[in-house]
Length: 182
Image 1 (cartoon, one colour):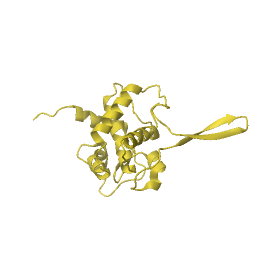
Image 2 (cartoon, rainbow, N blue to C red):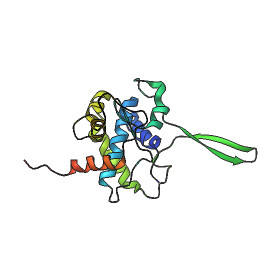
Image 3 (cartoon, rainbow, N blue to C red):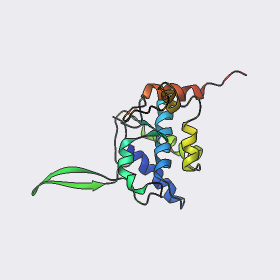
Image 4 (cartoon, helix red, strand yellow):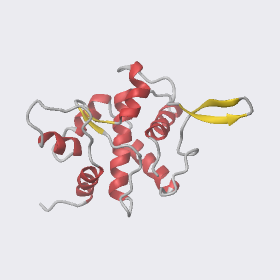
């Protein structure tokens, strides 16, 4: 079982906070997507980092759970971490408790945590300085998974809820690993 999108988002929000920076929802979405894509390409068994497939939206790939979590921010900086809740059976019956998911408190048995942390740090180094719209534009470039799916659709048609398959994402990111002959 992979990480939740919230745990990955919180990782990037923490990194930004530690540097005195903020991130918008669009930035969090794209950073999570790049982490997910590179993990699919680099993991020996091509396991997903995030247990949710992104959807094909107008501004690129979007994890619906992150959109729901941070929708109220619009394009403004996110000021709090994603939260989830779980039910606890206690003496007073069933109660719920909020917590902040992180890669340190989620324990996916199929994910190498050290590799995941190293990958997330590298994603931050490579993509963390881009503006929201630069990141969005990057996901629209030729050969990117969002673009491959978008180009396969009739013009002007972006059906709601269309998932970006992990296989397509993996293939596109693996192509980036192969040097092109000049």
